[in-house]
Structures are given as structure tokens and as C-alpha cells.
Image (cartoon, rainbow, N blue to C red; front, side):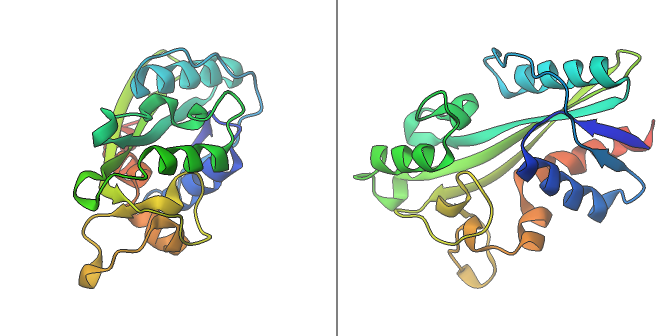
Length: 197
């Protein structure tokens, strides 16, 4: 089965392809080169549905779209849906990360709890829609570490690491990230829906 992933972000395409290979190797995820809708939703689910609907309409294929971000407890869940634009409209990942670190500069470890959220929408050409969510709990480091991943990965320390390790996702291997991430958790919830198609 072929599905289009409604994103122009090559990092997300590569990440989804790796996740899919681990759970549904019969599913072919293809990139999307069509028009992007304005993401004016106020929730992850609203934005994911906007993107998936646009891709399904443009391609005639089943479409997956992910809307995701980092949610920081002490900031009331922000950046949240504004994660990609936290430092402005240019989607500058480095500026976003640096601004968030600066905002939390004087916040002690017990108050740096955060989680990644991924909401995946599946929109079928016949109009059926499904939405699933994955949460990856952890906390934020005081400085970036590791060259892997993208976005906020270098400052996110996931909970439950073996042997009490406190590595950031930037220090994870690709395989480690794909097996544990918020997107992997959301996609796991989507597998039964895909199997029923």
C-alpha cells in the first residue's frame, strides 16, 4: 500500500520511512511535493488534519500527516503547536532551540519537565479520517548535546533510559530514536487502523 506523507520536511520523511520499516514493511511512504495549507489550527490534531486532507486531495492517495512539537510544563505546554515558529516565522531550528534554552536558563532540573507530542492524521481518498497521538515524556537539558536528530532533540532527555542514563535524543542512534520517539508511539497506535484498510 502506498501512502503520501504530507510534509516537505526531509527529516520527517526519513524518520517516518525508518519507523514504517520496523512495523509495516509492506507500506510504502512517499514524499509530498504539492501545496502546503496554512497551518492555522490551534491544536496538533487540527494542523495534522489540515495537512493530510490537502495531500489526499492533491494526490488521490491515502495521506498521513504529523503535527508535533515540544511541550514544556513550566511554560504551560508551550511551545506546543508553535514549536517550529518559536523564534519567528522562518522555522529556524537553531534559533528556536536557543530561545527555549534562554527562557529556561534559571529553571532548576526538577522544574524542567517536558514531553514531545506527535499527532498523526490519516485521511483516505474516500473521506474517512483517523487521528492518533504519541507522547514521549522527559525533561530539558541546560545545553545542547549530540549531533543526531533535529529540532529540539539535542536538549530533550527522555525518561526511562537504561541504567539511569541521561542522554539527549541528539546522542541517540537513529534506531534508538525510531523505536522510542513520539512519532513511533503515534504510529504504533495507527498500525491497527492501517491493517484494517
